[in-house]
Length: 442
Image (cartoon, rainbow, N blue to C red; front, side):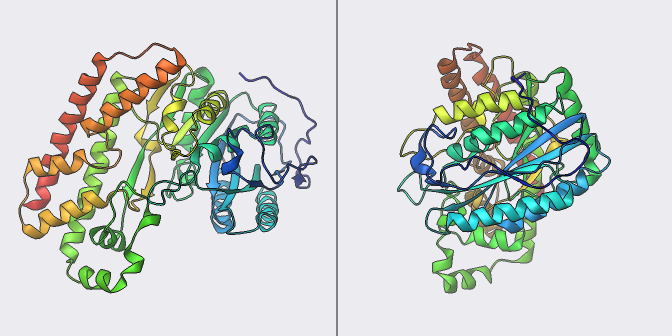
């Protein structure tokens, strides 16, 4: 495991909130953080942390989350406070509050960080918080402009974050990191009724600490408004919701949504549920046979602190100036040759569809409206669904990334013959899923 520092600690009692004694410069540089390119993170606040450390705990899960508003942080802290009760696993929260450069002053974000830490103290939650502003990674406003790799690597590798993590290593031999998005909901890590599932995951790391990454994937979740927005969207599913043109054409949107029946919306919602179910099944099957072949989604990954740090270094070093920062989840499974993925659908989280499934939903609506659908038409829609492991194209691309990663890392576990087998699994489940969906058209 990682080298451990032994800082001064206060056992068994809560003490005042700590603000770092060494002020981090507002202007980030390569030498002060894990960021490769400081241009994307122009400002950073002070680093705040709590000093609520028991003498010893069985396991710790550090929940790393990027937050855009204080209200989200408040909800998460309240949920963690409840989930920690009667659990052998101590949930710790590491928050990075962020805004696009120029949208809000860093001093205001700094004040909010201090308020967030005070709430952690009040609720008895161990945690840290800092803020930063960011610049777009690309001038193409139609793409993903947020610096995901910069932001997530800083959350793990900032030198004061590392000091905070090292304090946790002095009170537990089993420190795990969970990456998460702020928009997930009904997640087991926050659910006090699912303490047992989380405790079981934490226990499994005791014997396989640096040899596994757990994920449960996620379920796409929608409501009527989201379905109507997708049907009337003029934007491809490959683009983020922030590029939607709907807000510029409210009259057209209102006119078209009136023509969509509740029955059609209900069928689409049922089909999304079917796709979620088969998505779990295909990932389980691929992972059973190939332990590095599925994509590890950033919103739902559990790994050792050691693996997290190694993966964050790879993420930092993979940043290419002027390009969108996507796909960092795949680097963690390659952080070490011995690391394998473990898929557990009981750990699945839930994410709103946003714009990711626009093409699928629009295609389904067309089939429902025209009252005609075939297995082949549905299979084609599944093939084009965002990040679907039932898509032969997606799983093939993942293996290409894998080959490139392993060539870079020289771990040499890639087998080109596996790609055809994995594509065969994807095709099989795509056909089964299409048959299940056809029942909605009868």
